[in-house]
Length: 109
Image (cartoon, rainbow, N blue to C red; front, side, top):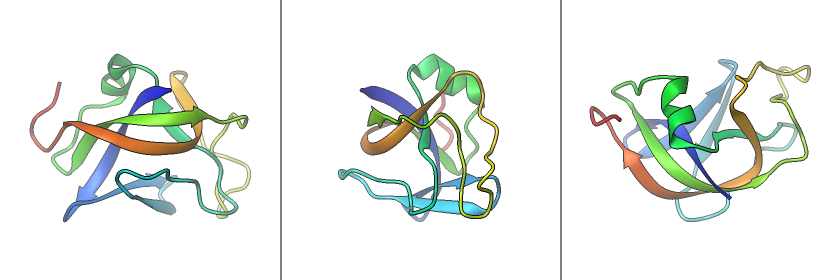
C-alpha cells in the first residue's frame, strides 16, 4: 500500500521519535522494520491526513512510502510497553519503504 510519513532530517539522515524516547533511523530504498520489542510504524494513507497532522518544521521532510499494514493497532516500545497515543487517521505499518520525497525543508503543502 502507498502512504505518507513525516521524518526528522539531520545531515541527510531520516529519523522518527516515539514518545520522546525511541528513535528509529530509516534507510532509503529498502524495507524498514521496527526494532525488536517495538510496535509498528505510524503512517497516513492520504497526503491530506499527513499534512493535517502538523505543518512541517524546517528540519522535517514528508515522504511517500510503501507499507504493509500491521496486525497490531497501537504504538509501544521497550521503554513503554503500554503504548503511546496515535491520532485517528494513523495507519499502523509492519514495515515501510521510502519511495519518494514529496516536500522538504521550507517547501510544504
